[in-house]
Image 1 (cartoon, rainbow, N blue to C red):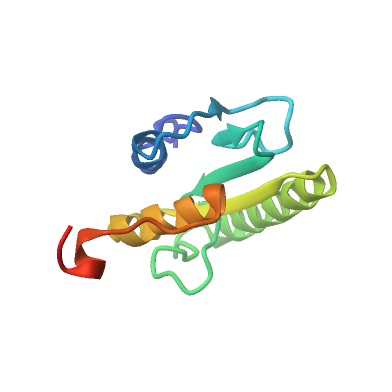
Image 2 (image 1 turned 45 degrees about the horizontal axis):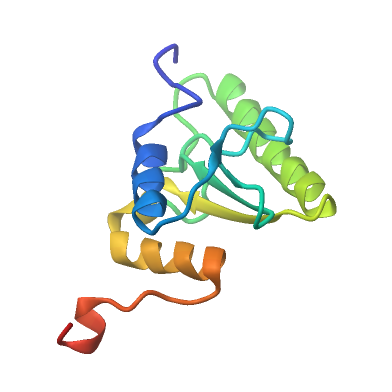
Length: 135
C-alpha cells in the first residue's frame, strides 16, 4: 500500500490532461478544503474529485469489492473512506462548492468523460467528430 499515492495518480493525470486541453485552468489539492480536492476551480466555485473505484467503493463497479483476505481490516477501512467522502461532499456543498466525482472506470470512454466535464464546467457539451459526421 506504500505505493498508492494520493496525488498524481494515472487516473488523475488523465483527467487533468483532458481539462487542460479544454482550456480550463485549475489549482491542485487545496489543503484548506475538506478532502483535498484533486482539481479546484476557485473562480467557478467548482471541484473535481477523481476517485479510484476500489478505494472509494464505486457502487456497481466490478473493481469495487472487499478483498477475500483480511476482511476484518478491509471492510471497515473501505466503509470509513465512503463515509469520509460523503462528509467532505456535504461540507463543500454547504460552503457553496459544486462537486463532480469522476470514477476511475469512467476513463475508458474519454469522449463521454470530456463532455461530462465540459457540461459541468461550462454548462455546454463539446461538439465531436462522431456526433455530426463531418467536422
